[in-house]
Amino acid sequence: MKTEAVILAAGLGTRMKSDIPKVLHPLGGRPMIAWTIAASKEATSGDPWVVIGPDAQDVQKAAGEGVKFVEQRERLGTGHALLQSAGQLRGRCDQVLVVHADLPLLGAQSMQRLIEIQERNPGPLTLLVAHSESSRGFGRILRNDDGNVIGIIEEAHASPQQLELQELNVGAYCYEADWLWDRLSQLPLSPKGEYYLTDLVAMAVNEGREVAVATVEHIDEVIGINTREHLAQAEFALRSKVNRDWMLAGVSILDPASTYIGPDVQLGRDTVLLPNTHLWGNTIIGAACHLGPNTIIRDSVMGDRCVVEASVMEGATLESDVDVGPFAHLRKGAYLGQGTHMGNFGEVKNSTLGAGVKMGHFAYVGDATIGDRVNIGAGTVTCNFDGERKHRTEIEEGAFIGSDTMLVAPVRIGREAQTGAGAVVTRDVPDKGVAVGAPARVIRKVK
Image 1 (cartoon, rainbow, N blue to C red):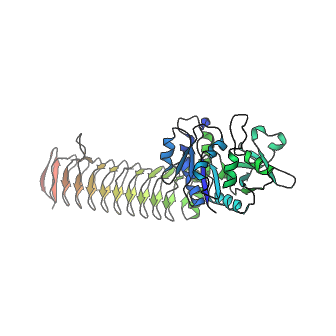
Image 2: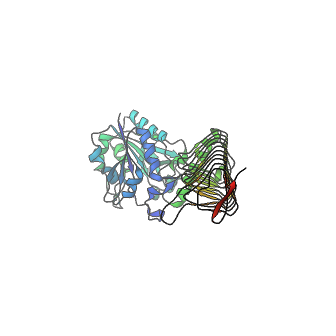
Image 3: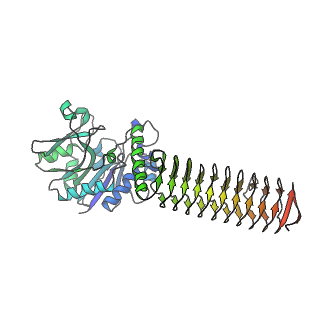
């Protein structure tokens, strides 16, 4: 059977108290809606349809490629939202999977279970339910004495006895497509002037048809997000799952509650993460690395056996056996060769440091190419910007840069050359030249 997914994302999310659409609030480093889109694609092996409200260009942009959109011009309830997709989907599939974008932790396996049960169900629809003592505002599943589903009662309208029920309707459904499209236009108008998908259950029961259920195995999957508090709860649940999975894969995390690992991060075995370590974006960490505490790494690549302590990396690359920090900043385009040491309060931007470079502390290297085994003294600065353009500095293999050297780019320091402490280098220094002074002049060759 062919199943098409429809994601309902047209709600205003007024309880978030935000100018940002609810489905764009970040969860685990991604917009909330991105999680639902990814899970639905995996569950159906196809691109989902997303129902959006008017002026939802930001939602369309965040949804990425492989997503089709339907606009709900008037927000008249979930039934009305789904009806907007009828023109595009009628006759194109056997089943329709419907999920809400504010259930971002609902996984592909739960969606697949919902689809598979409906494939075997002689009736027109299957509900996804959860069993929990905490209702989280979900409606209750009503059953008759034979155990058959006969309806859904919303929490606001439930009697005290119904409120005791612990089988919850979480708001995900799979429908027989032909039945669905014919019934959506027959939904009754609620007292609030809206049309609700939950009324389809009563329609099926009144027709004598069977309503099946699929049960969520992990209750955290159905954390519906309507407020900032709910978002924080979902963030905690997601972080706990991600960290647990990495620990099972051979990564040591000393304090999982303070460790953040993005969904696209890759980690090598025997790597250790100390408290308050944040790994985001397309970050790849090798084996046996030691990161943190208080370290932020984003969109960076790291080889094996690296140490990064209390530092920030953004778009940087480390080869193996590199140690960085504390309090270092590697900016976009920084590349540190094997065995390089970068100490406290150093900064590197758009520069390559060769193997075995020593950059102890209090130095800035920008737009530079540094050869192997170069020593960069404390307080060294590559003066790369003249107010209009950036210029490059080249330091050849084996050079020694004295403390507080100012390298005014464009400039080249030759192989095994040296600069004296406090030198202001405005001209190239030849191989094995020794430059001192301000402005610096070459006084002799290295013996």
